[in-house]
Length: 149
Ligand SMILES: [Zn+2]
Image (tube, rainbow, N blue to C red; front, side):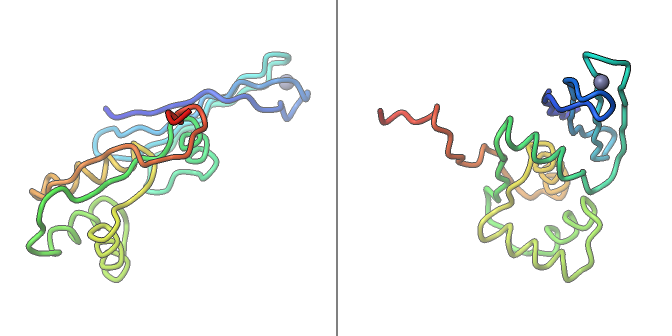
């Protein structure tokens, strides 16, 4: 199972105290799933939510991207035909043919950027059709990683 998670703190909607929230994305039995679980330190407020589907709520994606950085999916070999790429994209995401064409063109030109789990899922679908791809960290400007100084 491919999974990525992060703990963030938020303000409790019930008492205004500090809530610890666990958010994450994971890949389970061919499905992209996400979850969010919160518990207030100061009162009994808490929740647990989980769902599967091609679209993860944006606040969860942003929390993961901020904590772990983005991942980049690129083709690592020659692709003689875009047909298997289109098929892979359409099986991984719910896309119209037009959308799949646009995304295939983007994949060939620049690659995709997204969360690690999203990119790994696409990589699984592409590799199933014998398309060679790589997933690597996308360059992200982090002051702490600056080795020039
Ligand atoms: Zn509370």
